Structure formats: C-alpha cells, structure tokens
Amino acid sequence: MNKRELSQLNFLESEIKQLKKRIEWAENYGNPPIATDSVKGSSPHFPYTEHTIMITGIDYSKHNGAVKKLKKEYQNKLDELASILEETFKYIYSLPNSEMRQILTLRYIDKLSWQKVAESMGLEGDGSTQRKKHDKFIKLS
Image 1 (tube, rainbow, N blue to C red):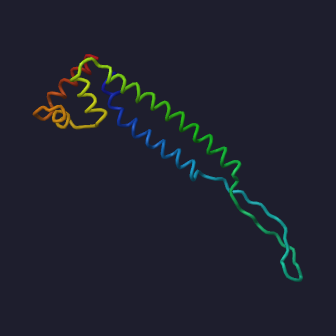
Image 2 (tube, rainbow, N blue to C red; image 1 turned 60 degrees about the vertical axis):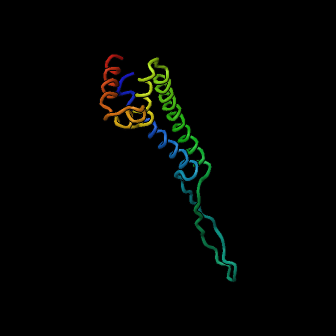
Image 3 (cartoon, helix red, strand yellow; image 1 turned 45 degrees about the horizontal axis):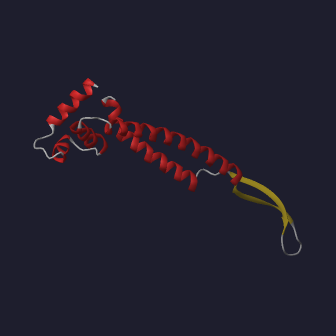
C-alpha cells in the first residue's frame, strides 16, 4: 500500500457520505416525471356546457423504476468504496509494527496533523519524527 492509496481514505469516506445522501434523496424526492392528460367534463349547472379539463400529476410507475435504478447504481458504487475502505483498514491493522500502526491510524483514519499524531502517541515534538518514519515506511513498502 502506498501513500497515495492511504491518502485516499479521506476522499473515500467523503464519497461514501455523498452517495448515502444521494440514495436518501432518490428515495425521498428523486426527479418524478410529470404526466398530463385531458378529459371531457361539463359544468355542474345548466346549460351543462362540455369542456376539456387538463389533469397533471406524477407518473409513479416511471418514477419508481427510475429511482430503483438510480439507487442500485449508487449502492453498487457504495459497496465498491466500502470494500476499498475495508481493505485499507485491514492493511493498517495487519502491520506487525505497533508504532507504524499507530502512526498510520492516527494520520489516515483519525486524520490528525503530524503534531497531533505525536501528542496522541504520548511523545513530545512537532511530529516530524513520526512523519519521517512514515515516509521511510512508505518508501520501503
């Protein structure tokens, strides 16, 4: 696993949130097609004049099919992203070196700055040591 793949964690999580919002939107609102039709009717009072009445509404049969298709596409992408995310987590948690596991977890999963990484590990400094260890590890991976 390289630095580029690890740095994608932020973007993967963001994209997953966006897809979940899109699925929710599709379920609740979508973009329903409008259907119009006309019927003939007459006035309720004499002389009962016949006239055309326009009826407008939502074509739910088309709408439900489109929403279902959209949700399926979003869900497929969501599953794909979740799989990549899971692989990345597994990689980090499978590292035998505890220090490196902590550095990668704090940096990529918890999204901390290098200084906060050092503080979270109970170390002094600006985090440059952890960054250098990280860079060396990534270069050797």
